[in-house]
Amino acid sequence: MSDTSKRGWLIPIGGAEERSTDALILRRFMELCGGRDARILVIPTASELAETGPNYVSLFEEMGARSRYIPIDEREDCFAEEIVSTLERASGIFLTGGNQLRLSTILGGTPVARSIRDRFAKGVHVAGTSAGAAIVCEHMIAGGPTGPTPTENGVTMAPGLGLTNKAIVDQHFRQRDRLGRLLTALSYNPFATGLGIDEDTAAFISPRGTLEVVGSGAITVVDPSGLQHSSMHDASDQDPISLIGLTLHILTAGDHFNLETRQAQAITLN
Amino acid sequence: MSDTSKRGWLIPIGGAEERSTDALILRRFMELCGGRDARILVIPTASELAETGPNYVSLFEEMGARSRYIPIDEREDCFAEEIVSTLERASGIFLTGGNQLRLSTILGGTPVARSIRDRFAKGVHVAGTSAGAAIVCEHMIAGGPTGPTPTENGVTMAPGLGLTNKAIVDQHFRQRDRLGRLLTALSYNPFATGLGIDEDTAAFISPRGTLEVVGSGAITVVDPSGLQHSSMHDASDQDPISLIGLTLHILTAGDHFNLETRQAQAITLN
Image (cartoon, rainbow over all chains, first blue to last red; front, top):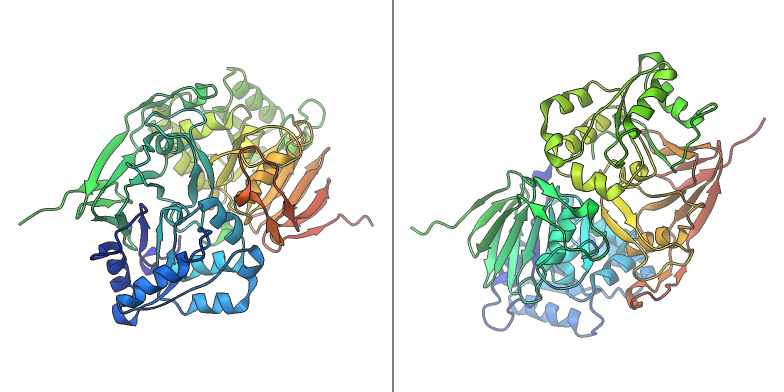
């Protein structure tokens, strides 16, 4: 493994982050990227709305940072030298919401995807909201039915950007009832930790793998490392599956979870 | 990245490898593992047939190697010290066929999965046939419909053992008409190379990432690095998708493909 302590921070956000009053999550990301010296590059590719990129740029500029967005609508845009060199000057990268399969199918295997991985490894911070949160993982949840029960076909997975292999992220978590599809993803190979991130909530993951919750909702952490039994391999199409021995933490603002040791810690109020 | 030149060889086999006359693929694997000094550990977990493990042990012993199998039927078996220490004495690891989701759900996140990854990184060779071939990848094809056309929902993916991130393997390739699901998997994130491996055919992948075809069938190599357009992100449920600019190679015994440079080379007959 490379020296992970040189990485940037990784900040998956559960979508619908508050933007009109204190914009707590976006502001903290901007401070991390250098505050008034920050250069935040917005990648609005997941969205098909023309205003998504300009809107985030305005937000970050109102906070005092420098910001621009790069318009990437087709794979060929990802081979333009100008876009890659813009990426190389950023101190922070922000992936908007939309459709995560749009992101992975357009960026995957291109110089832009390689540059994001490279910049992240060298200390540039990467935040993503909604679809942008899903894709930061090596193993991305691309879709699936709603509901709390894991089922044999209960999730669609695809390769993501690969910025972490320690966590599988789902988003809009409480609002869209997605526990079942997160559990299904974990049951396929119970090695990663599942992070179900509510709207207006973010996991600020440090270079060493310690996560802090920021925002108004909760993060549902599912740790399958103690899983004793799973019926996944015997289940037929759409069957609910049994999973015995999962560890569950519900974490709110200020709480921590270490993705290496899998230890949770509640905030201590003095 | 770690120094990949110290890795073992990785040998995904397309299933139904010939075992009764010259057993070409299995013999070459056994020679690579040390010939008469080989210690080949068979992991029959994918299969639910009691004879699968003993049958492979007999085959390898008839060739002159030492061999044993480890019975792993439940996750708790993967925490037994004896099983992990047996793994640590092997010069080669062989994963049988069966159901790859059975393998990933039972081994995933346990000391056995970690030990296989660790041993492979230190030079132990890993071969897998059928389900055992699918799971060696970071991104594993777990299932999907048959047919040549990629469709929006045309594959089920899950995290595999993670011994390579350069290739996505499908097996029984020609025999079960699986081009469509391999293309669907690649379209989700066009960064890896697709390897569709026929029965009785193997990809012998060197530590530096050069693949040689061994056996009686072909390997269908799909390289998406030049992909210009994909309609995946606009497709609806079950829609066929368009993919423009894929590179395709059909390789047979003796041909090579370099997974790093993506160059194919046909065998030269002198």
